[in-house]
Image (tube, rainbow, N blue to C red):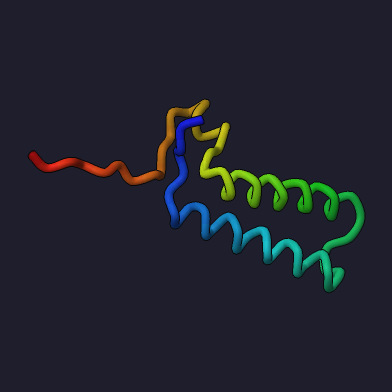
Length: 71
C-alpha cells in the first residue's frame, strides 16, 4: 500500500475519533447511531495508523506531501 494521507489528515481523523468516543461515553449519542459512529471512528483510527485511505485511492486523492530531491 502506498501512503496517501498526510500528517494533518491523520491528526484530524484521530481527533474526530476521540470526539466520537467522548460523545458515546457521556451518552450524548445513543441507539443505532452509536454503533455507526463507533465503526466510523475505528476506521478513522485504523486508516490513520497505516497512513492509507482506500476512499482516497478510489478518487485519486493524496494528502501526503511528496519530498522533492534537489540535484
